[in-house]
Amino acid sequence: MRKIVIAGNWKMYKTQAETLDFLRHFLGLLSETPDGREVVLCAPFTALGALSKSLHGARVKVGAQNLHWEAEGAFTGEISGPMLRELGVRYVVVGHSERRQYFGETDETVNLRLKAAQAHGLTPILCVGETKQQRDAGETESVITAQIENDLVDVDQTNLIVAYEPIWAIGTGDTCESAEANRVIGVIRSLLKNPDVTIQYGGSVKPANVDELMAQPEIDGALVGGASLEPESFARIVNFQ
Ligand code: 13P
Image (cartoon, rainbow, N blue to C red; front, side, top):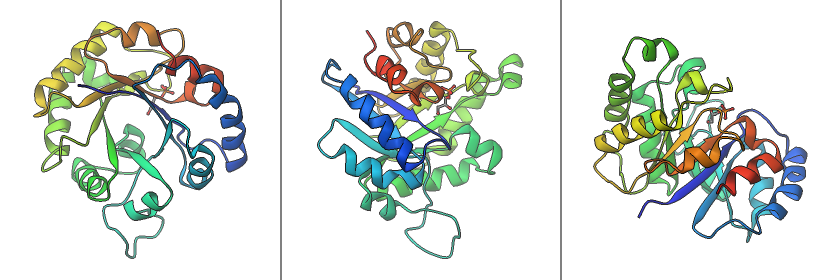
């Protein structure tokens, strides 16, 4: 059975005070959320402690946005799996296109981070997706296939979420058509060994398009950037119909 997982990726937004303010509004909007939907907030490292404490007993799980592959060491500016676990983190985004594009992450480091997340009891959310240029050149399938194959070497597919995030749809308001997102996610599923892996769509998911996206048979959830920053809009997404 594939689990439905709706995750907010806050990127580099929200101080601790802003996090607590968000929760004050957001948690009260989840009373109608159907059982069996996992709700996750992937916050900046500095807000994780406050988030965990405030979510104790709530149905919302805590996620981080990256981790290093070593448990400790001389890696200035990095954060490890055990450090995240201590803060009550359960999920971690790995290989987001912004990490690949701006911080030099490669399939090799993404693979190391995925294995480290699993070794420390975290569920990684692996992001894959093509650029506009690659899509226009007809390379979507080959790009996705290479990412999945290289990133998942020796990765346990029983503790994994994949997010299909076409780069041209991120932060642009230019959502991938739901049928096309469904098609590419079907391609990703055909590349996986475990048919039960949850595969999310991400890229300009909004209250106005979430119902249609989630009605697609291959789409098991959403990874939401901008629209997860505001309690009402993220609650509407979590409570999709
Ligand atoms: P937006 O929802 O702002 O397009 O961001 C998507 C994303 O990158 C989530 O990881």
